[in-house]
Image (cartoon, rainbow, N blue to C red; front, top):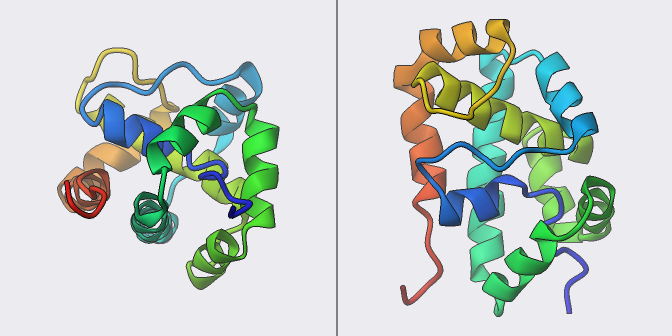
Length: 155
């Protein structure tokens, strides 16, 4: 069994279940980290590229749905530890110039900023990240939608 159970792939359960809804409330610590995270276009593009690769990897695994359920019950620290222990996940992050912690905070930050820019109820992001998302919505939303639309083989 692979050590990685979507480690900190916070976006995958959300993307598969609620692609058009605001993400579930994050822990207080994660929420604070998300509000402090500053999005830039290079970071956003790296996060989206990693998200797409990570999502493809995750949905290619047998029993991925059970793994997603388990992951959703884990603490952020547990998900981070699992990601760090998975060589394939780490290779995806390295290829995109990201650390596990940056990915774990950056993906939900970007997702929330894009949702807040579209006035989706419940989405929270810093005012700077909402402004960034509004300025780049036409470029970034299709990339997020593409990553969200990845489905397991045979579905």
